[in-house]
Amino acid sequence: ANGVFTYDPGFMSTASTESAITYIDGDAGVLLHRGYPIDQLAEHSDYLETCYLLLNGELPDAESKQQFIAEITQHTMVDAQIAKILDGFQRDAHPMAVMVSLAGALAALYHEGLDIDDAAQRKLAAIRLIAKMPTLAAMTYKHSIGQPYMSPLNSLNYAENFLHMMFGVPADKPNVSPVLAKAMDVIFLLHADHEQNASTSTVRLAGSTGANPYACIASGISALWGPAHGGANEAVLTMLNEIGDESRIEEFIARAKDKDDPFRLMGFGHRVYKNFDPRSRVMRKICDEVLADLGVENDPLFKIARRLEKIALEDEYFIERKLYPNVDFYSGIILKAIGIPTSMFTVIFALGRTPGWISHWNEMLSNPYKIGRPRQLYTGPVQRDYPA
Ligand code: SDX
Image 1 (cartoon, helix red, strand yellow):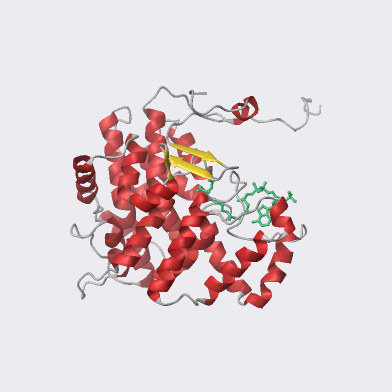
Image 2: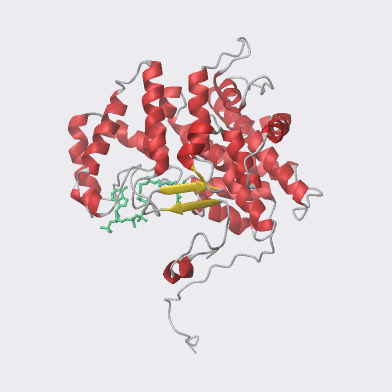
């Protein structure tokens, strides 16, 4: 009740924390980052500017934006030890398992003398994480295909650099499509933060103990991995491939409605949005643009996705339960069109969500806080004596 947003007492009793970073109205399909609607940011801003906004609370002026980009650029390289850690993984290790380890490795590299009560050191941790996640993600991918790692290039922007490190080779000069780089940048932006979702709450809970921030991010990556959360984008592609043909859509819709069948329609439904997810509308528009630009608008998976969305939105079961496409429904199709392998989809989500995670961590530590301690309703036996 800050004079602008007021909550009914029922909601207040469920709120686990206070935050000024992101506001979601699930019924109205509203998502604001520091007051700015997500569709306006997707239209007019870019990922690094949105990272600055999440961290600092205001959009940067031109000079602050350049300074922020320069700081990020300065920290894109990673310690040579990281390559040795990657060598310990088999090539087909799931990239999310690798990323949990690499974020944890950053905790080992940046631990001595780390004072998380110092605002400047917290900001440096945020800069390092936003800067290094693309490098770690690209190295994870290169390791999986046995190709040499690509160093970040200061001459490229954030999204171009990521795609260069993912798909570039030492023998070739950088060659990144501006359309794909722009699509990548908007995908990162759409994933940047989302209030107290499972992985952000995990980062906050870990951070509330005073743990190393890089280790807290490793815990967030772990929580994001599940198919009910960030793993859904990978699960959407698996589902679309399993459907395989528009003629089989009704069969899968029936399975999604069958209580005895654990199958759920991946990319549909949300814990908070009981109306459309504003991010999926933007994602759908990018999907159109990227597929058209690549001349694959007749991609069979995209056609199945479009038809599946239409049928589900007209089906009583989904309407009654207010199940709409969420952020993950279309992102996988765009990522596939860009050439990102399915196993890397959730890594892209983790990369995009890093500024959200670390902004919530920084916000919590910038104010007096206590260790998190969720309580429970005990449903076990009453006290009893050990048998004589
Ligand atoms: C993300 O929290 C966040 O903000 C997350 C996220 C973020 O940015 O951080 O937005 C990202 O995680 C998006 C969600 C990605 N997950 C998926 O797409 C996986 C598929 N979706 C479902 O697993 C599910 O919708 C959840 C997990 C997202 C939500 O599950 P809930 O809370 O159980 O959904 P609900 O309570 O609203 O369900 C109501 C009914 C139930 O049926 P009934 O018991 O009432 O008969 O709808 C059913 C559910 O069984 N249902 C589905 C369904 N989702 C819910 N039925 C079929 N297919 C689905 N996808």
